[in-house]
Amino acid sequence: MHPLLNPDGPAPLLLVCDHASRAIPAHLGTLGLPEALTHEHIAWDIGAAALTEGLAGALGAPAVLAAWSRLVVDCNRHLDEPSAFIEVSDGIPIPGNAALTEEARRWRIEHCYEPYHQAIEAQIARMQRAGVTPAVVAVHSFTPRLRSAGVDRPWHVGILWDTDDRLAAPLLEGLRREPGLVVGDNEPYSGRRAGDHTIDHHAETHGFAHVGIEVRQDQLLDPAGIQRWVDLLSRALRPLLADPAGFPLQPPTQSSSPRPRPW
Image 1 (spheres, one colour):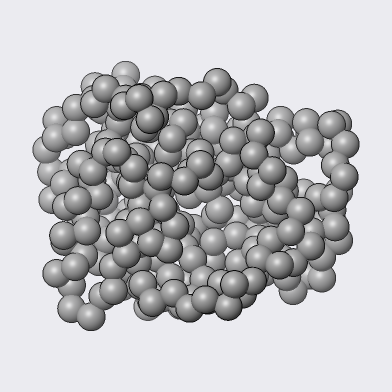
Image 2 (spheres, helix red, strand yellow; image 1 turned 90 degrees about the vertical axis):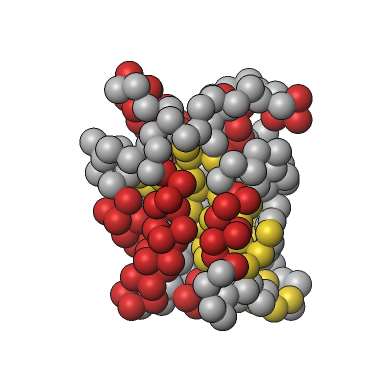
């Protein structure tokens, strides 16, 4: 069961958090890793779950959070992508993902991957039955430095988008008005990359307004930091959600044509 927060929230917004958890099913142990590494960014997006929970409360929005570590299966990947069951993450080998059998893959898909995406679909369907066309916002966090590449990341927050800028453009504008913030436009990752499965599958291909938000992890290390970002992001998002009819369906573009279900 994947956590569902504020399921009856009135906002025309669905928050999703693909990498909310570092949990690993008991029978998989630590996937052969030292326990300490399962607390690091390779296992989850540090601070993202708490930020999502805070935004759900501040905006009156429902939220779906993945229940398992991305090392078990990455819910933000199509299952035919090698990084769905990643064998090396930021230069660190993941022994428990080497030479997975089809049976092992299938267990993770059925118990960890499918329920998350089904929970998102169910929440979108519930909102549509209530006459709400949801905007979809994916909440992530990123490391200040990419260890494997030795690259520092100067952005405090990144806004990720592809062909639909209905949320991205005003969010970028609003956040850039905040004093001292370094705001990335498709940085440190791009919304145009293939590994953005959740938004592509549940929002872009159906014409829902959508955006990905990445906050640097050193901004989310304590309750005060998390609350600061809840305030910043809710202040930027709230005016966009004031009119429930503000984001009617937009026909999918050719570049976002639906892929078959991965399960």
